[in-house]
Length: 355
Ligand SMILES: *Cc1c(COP(=O)(O)O)cnc(C)c1O
Image (tube, rainbow, N blue to C red; front, side, top):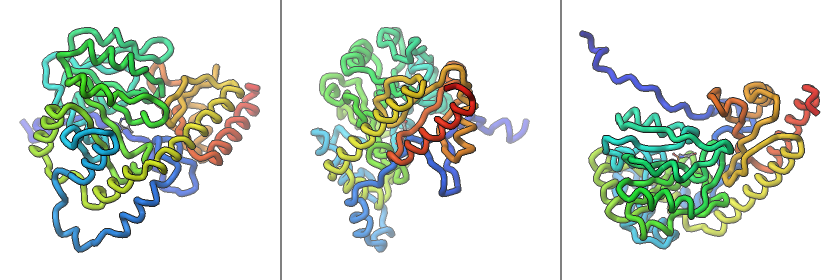
């Protein structure tokens, strides 16, 4: 018997690389290429460091209220956390306490199985169909909860609101979590369903569409009974999750609706233009409703493309995993970044004799 027998061994989630050099084109973690709203800078400059000696509001009241107002909800229907990773982890602990398995897609956000293992929650991965689509009927079996991103990651494929509703409606005895990290890039949110389905939780984040991955703010929207349950778990763990600066800049960001809309519109336009150009070069891809493209080139191993782009200081995401091994996930950057990407890919295909 050794102390080592009492040490928890887990296999952690591996986030995309954050390269140290400044001169790389970083298209590997779905960050927004544009800065946050100018109001965020103003809020930051208005902070008084003397206030930092005091704890922040444990309920994050100002931020919760601003989010509730933006989405037409009551404050009691909103919960905020340190990025949606924090909110989702809290959701796993709060809502997935059954002996039955939690269901999620086999190709999806790779944090779900990590949390399930960490919290000792049984789970079952449900295969996507041949075109990387979630099949709603496959979630009509006994379970201890359901979670999926919409649009899904890393595929970018969107379910319609009707399909999401079908999953929620067919699971009245489970909590269904829709992870809407990318919903602002063209999808229809399940938010209007939360008043009709008391088992539905919609989770969103400031990290992608609001250009604030570095601040760490995510939020859940649901019936107030579920929000109260989340709060009770949070207050049993860490009361002060959102710092004073994060409260201030998050509130400023959510109030600048015009900037937010313009930013999302630009990214969608760049995405559609890049997709068109890559298809013309011979790439295959899913129809992405997110701020990334999930692409492959017939006959070229994904790992080769990944290594080549890296040698050109263009970082994208690649998983050495079955089924998706020949795909790259490429974040939509600025128009200039996409131009450089397309030129590099064109060069590669020419040298390889693929065109
Ligand atoms: C990026 C992402 C998140 C987490 O984002 P946070 O930065 O923690 O808010 C959650 N789910 C999916 C599917 C994501 O892609």
